[in-house]
Amino acid sequence: MAAIASGSAPAAAGAQAEHAGPPLFRNAVAEPPVAAESPEGHRRTPVKQTADGEAGGCSARYEVLAQEAIEAPRTGPSCSPAGGRRPSHDNDAFVHQAAALPSVNMEATVKAAQIDPRRPDDTLTPGAKAGVLLVERALRDRHLLDAKWVDGYFGTATVAAYAKFQNSLGYTGLAANGLPGKASLPRLAAGRFTLTHVIDPGSRVSSGGFVLNTRTRSMLGEATRLLGRELVLEQGSYNPGGDPTSAGTHDGGGVVDISVKQMSAATRTAIVRALRQVGFAAWLRSPDQGDWPWHIHAAAISDTDLSSQAQHQIGDYYLGLNGLANRGPDDGPKVTIRTWEEYQRR
Image (cartoon, rainbow, N blue to C red; front, side, top):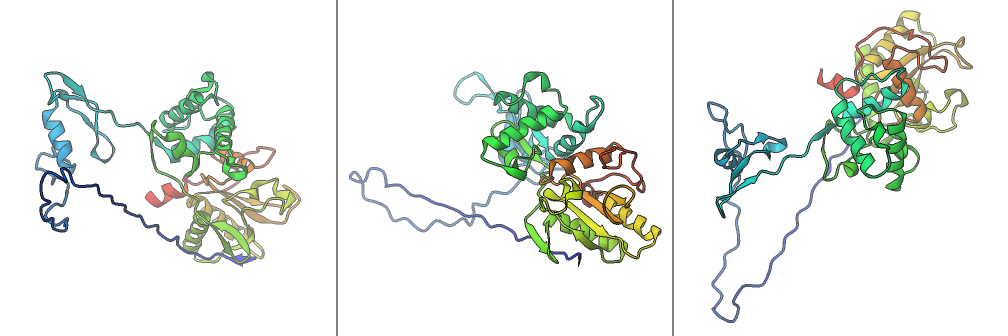
């Protein structure tokens, strides 16, 4: 057993490249002296906000395009002009602005991929339909999803199709679990849509002999802060076959078991509540429910490394169920269900 630690992930740096070509008319004229190029005096800055809000902090190029437009463009991501028409500078015709690509909210889409397969009906996950449709159309166009399933509902057929797409990229195991991930979803999006609210489970880290990812570790650290007491793990994540009673839920990321030894009923409930507040689907498990001692089982909502069994538990949690095979009613404290990302933005 180990107490929860916390940490942070390193940042990445970019790189630049440059090239040069030969001077023109080498044999016709003498080469003039050339001074070293300096960026000073050539800074490109956004147009400042005007009193009536026309520029909106966008670039000068966007402002000119908007002023020239016969049909004003909409403002797309990063101030890109979306739609509209402007005069051509070459003739008397009009040219259409290139429309900005639509966007997919990854958080909403991943949430739908966990909940929709567990629904008893065809209710859509709020806020997810537009993004799910874009994902489904891309899968259809790759001949991975039948057109009849392109409906904005991320059900079992869409999960299976997305897993096939992940397999087609060479991914296996957890990287082909049917949940849109940070690596696979941008490749499906290429030339079709952009992504917002990207989810990243982070790298795998060791905490007292148990393996977690950095997202899960941060969530546990925040729950610890809310409680004002340490949480002691009995089982971590990425533990395939480590505990037969877990039925595969710990095979992937985002899932932990927490010790409740020598705790009162009130303390156990307080821990479950804090875990739920920061984005876990969490339940107190008793020996009456299975071949295990008293413990708290917690699965991080929307962790894209989740095993399929853990995905199902989270879907059931949203539907008011207990995450067990009997799909009984949720017996835990009632809290507003939030993901970790939603909790951070609250």
